[in-house]
Image (cartoon, rainbow, N blue to C red; front, side, top):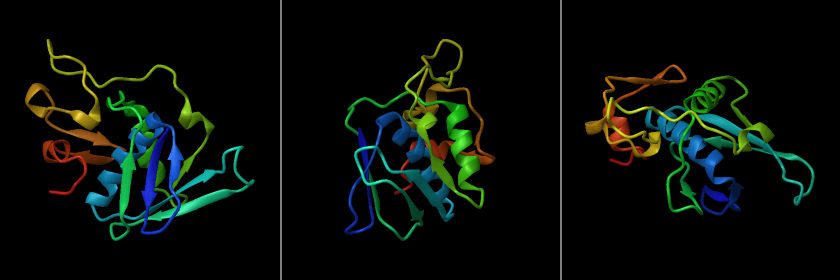
Length: 150
């Protein structure tokens, strides 16, 4: 179970590692472009009934913590779905399907290169000129600096 620490004094938000990895890619891409959006979810069964929404903005500190020390394989389709949602007026709504632990679409490396995960792409070993995620182009510079912190 991963955790997002949102803002200065807010309670941690717990999200399954795989879902959080996908969400992190979309959040980092949007914030790097100075774009704001919302993320909403229904409260888990162990919490009081309801739902929450947070405003994601470049000026609000975020920290992502993953329980699994190894990066997860990412689904291109899931990233595109989240990115498209982030660009809509309703923002991202995390639902039960987002926590499916079934098979994933792994991004394929160049011929002879191993499969890679988007969060840890070594662009020197990929035959990729450009990647579009949810209509937003991700450049090799984005892959070299996935957190956008320079």
